[in-house]
Image 1 (cartoon, rainbow, N blue to C red):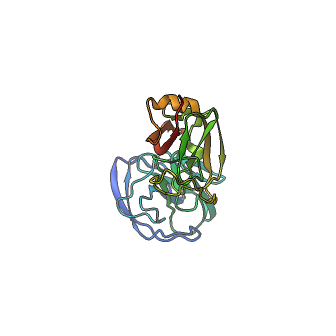
Image 2: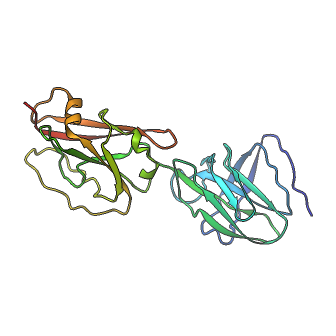
Length: 270
């Protein structure tokens, strides 16, 4: 059996990634790997990189860096976690069909399939996984579904607010307990698919129409805040003022996130 056990100092190699059956996406681009340490043993190699797919096209392009912290599993045989270069490699002693699975690190979403089947024959097999960094500035929507956001500071009720999920923002990665709206914590929260932001400007104080609530297929984080606590956070305001509410918090991995939304003051306490 050919032994591929080795320890390599830092160097750069250029490999042409040939297309591999069963991967379901293009692997024809030139890959530049900065390899620090590679230790594998076996007659054949299944190797590649988890890369930051900056343009989201599912193809590893020149200049797209490796993603650290991704767990790559050769199903039934073991796994490894990528380092700063995003590289992974498995040695196998026998030809045949294998399955490779990649688990996205926190804060990333996949742009290629997370699991692919490969056929090892006479040559080594290259498999690459594309991940894309999620947004860190979520879209905050006060009164989801409303074209304008009137705020009645005489109300003793709650102010509904949503953080909208999208292709590049997964609300399940947020720590809801960390969220503050103008420094006020939410009373409660839940997950549902609510209407997206209308994009309408609040230029007409008499406009009270609502948008049609059409789910967009992405889960949103909905929160309820005490209107009176929000009123206290605003300080001195008068009827007709348009003020900005700031949402701040963190993802589960500790990454800080912020977002803003404007509201129109329609009533103030005496």
